[in-house]
Length: 131
Ligand code: B12
Image (cartoon, rainbow, N blue to C red; front, side):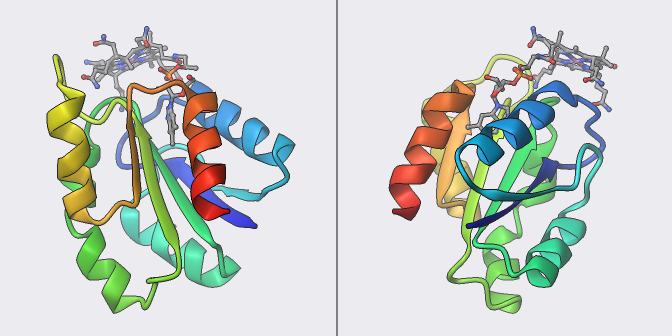
């Protein structure tokens, strides 16, 4: 399966992004890593270009919310109903409550949301979901 990944917005935290690429490859995924500082439009273009099955977005500095509110609209616009949309990392700024954050991102159009969740746990859940 093909996965497009990267860190959304003006976010330069690169360590998790590298770990995500390595871990996905180890699990047998074909990975297209756009790296840090990636804008939403670039993610969507890459999904179209690579015909990816999964878009996995990371946010560490917490600015994802400002970038990802239109996912539902864009999914429809680009005909991406079959693509699994995943987001994880630090999805809020400052003290944040997962019970509030997760439903919010689901409303924005993400299928799987991992707020301050360990990467391996998240990838196990992703594998179960796509299976
Ligand atoms: C190193 C670091 C930096 C370095 C980054 C160097 C680099 N190029 O990577 C520098 C000093 C440059 C930096 C800058 C900033 N940082 Co900084 N940084 C950190 C720090 C100390 C460690 C991050 C890290 O690499 N961790 C190691 C990796 C492996 O862990 P991780 O990032 O947490 O990722 C794990 C999980 O989140 C998860 N994960 C991540 N993505 C995904 C996706 C999915 C799908 C899943 C399932 C899981 C998952 O998997 C990873 C492994 O388990 C953290 C604090 C901390 N202790 O976490 C702050 C932190 C991330 N930074 C923070 C901030 C605010 C900033 C700045 C805005 C500070 C400033 N005022 O300038 C800037 C942002 C600049 C920018 N444009 O993005 C905040 C974010 C707060 C928030 N979200 O509310 C943190 C949490 C510090 C804090 N407690 O306030 N930072």
